[in-house]
Length: 122
Image 1 (cartoon, rainbow, N blue to C red):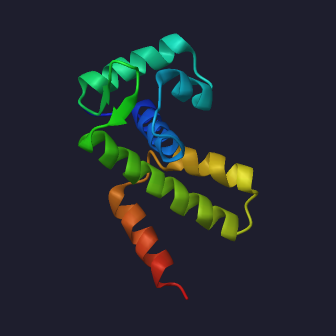
Image 2: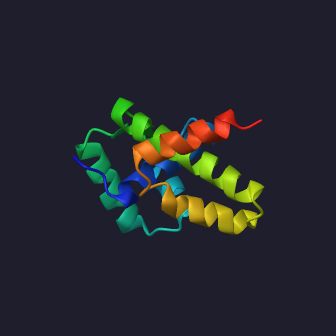
């Protein structure tokens, strides 16, 4: 199953929330993202069917290895891009917003080159 940008955003959100709490529910995801219950329910169902997450009998959402991999990749992109944009003088809120859009469309090759360039800087 190929993930759309929205699926990546849901996985990234689950990762972020799981760093704050061991118990992440669909309602937490919806509140964090500002999405309605039906939208979150549909996304959770698709991610579950795709093997990216599991939901236990108490409603706790856990990232499965494929979901964890996607979430960590997207979150790393988000952090690196946001940091870069703020370092070159972009307002932090704008940097965050721009990074959130770019993280989904930048190629792996370009991101890896960017990251290597940044790491090589003094």
